[in-house]
Image (cartoon, rainbow over all chains, first blue to last red):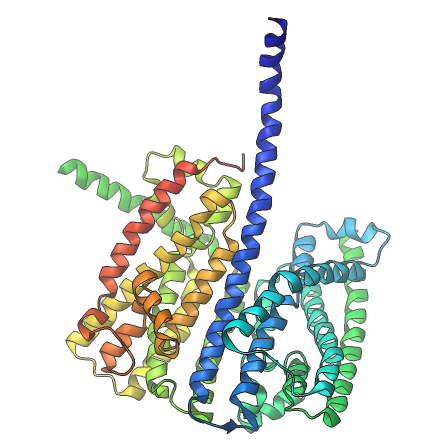
Length: 276
Length: 274
């Protein structure tokens, strides 16, 4: 009898914990669900792009010095790179500043930009296994094995990709830092997104665009984000010229590092003023 | 009968009040409006420009010339723009599930699906209609589209029907959140699938995909099939031209389906937020 009483009192008390446990379980399940759905999004993007290029190349040989199989490799890898280039820093900055949490962040004994970078690199690492590898597998199974032009091209592609990510990430920080002045990122984030989409060669490489547009794009850092490493990979930029291209990436990275540093210092000063 | 009329009147007045409130809220943030006003049109105009580059550099896309592609793209954009104006809340359904946003609605003596459907009028969405109109008008004039009475009615019914298809499709995908509590990426899937199947001709895809996008997820009726019928393009489609204009019928069917699934989902709703 005593036992039963004990039990009936025990159960209602534990019920909320069971509920929370179940909720946690659901959340983790939901995250797994997220993994699948994100993958599906990427596959849709992949399928759409591949068939668009296949249709464009139908019965045509080489256009702008690139043949169909090169272009499809380019397109597949563009989707693959997009899937792991994580730049949450923009939204992080937007949220932290809007909600005033940035004040607490600044007290922490770490360099904030470094902290955010490590966060994004962490996410990028998981994205490689959860998205990039499956995308490449799908491509190998259904479309094409995205092979490099040759070994030197592949070896040069690797540092170029790292620099690409650095460039893209710093553009995100620069955009995100604007929140210190605008208090809301909405529109600016989109401006950056559209500029990167068009000028980086992520969707259509610059060599298909009219000459005047290519000349403008050459003066900007965007095309070094996707086009440079991918053009090296498929051999559109020969290994001999690749070093020049990578050199340009380095120069742009340095410029953006300086810009980020300058803007960050300005922003910190501004926050001090706001804090009173 | 008079009961029915009275309740219709009641619903209409609640709907219009909610619309007015939504508009007033958004006019509080003019800068936000302006930034969208520049970006959205730019994004889609560049999208159609890229199609022109593809056609110029390569060849007509699966037999579709640039004027025809612009017509298709514009027609697809029109219903996209309208959907963003009247039905953007379907993008936030998952958020409402997690935050317990339906609690308020469940307390009111009004149909919840109605409240949800007429919850918001998105003024910023009009920005999406600007490139839509520009591209569609360009497409019409480039293809020499004949604005006869029949054609005008056809375009109007297609745009309205396609808006229903789009909203219902977003609602359906977001309803997953009632059970899983998350649907952000479901929305992304829906969005990408619609962009890929409404802004480009379906005939660039293999037959199996076309079949799915016609009979399983009927997104082909948003712009592809109507464009083939309106422009009399007859290569690479399996569907007879008479069925091609069935967009409104399919829209109404999908709207009904989304209401059924929504109501089922609402039973699983546990107001997690509070």
